[in-house]
Image (cartoon, rainbow, N blue to C red; front, top):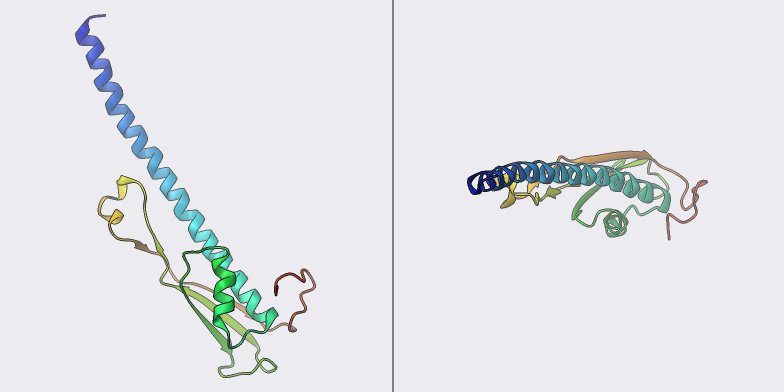
Length: 143
């Protein structure tokens, strides 16, 4: 093997390595995005569950705190009780909605997206009313 061939091998290796790392980082970022998507759906479901079981018709902060335990990036939620303006005894259900959730790419593949967060869709869950603090599956949800 001559010196020229050794140099050519190094250049080829470097080019292939760049392509391989680009794909690897892209797959990692896409996996993180799917995880964030799934966690946001689960946090929305858990927030609605907490609201209907623990009777927090007026305290969105407790619902938000429960949701942030699953996904700390959540900052804006909306709880809409059905019918509007109902009390703890007359509510029929709740819709919990997460808005304003953004995803930040870490790999250089996204280029300009790295400078600005990518907005995720709105996540929403409706659950019908349950008896306050009585969950047959778990007594720990309200603690």
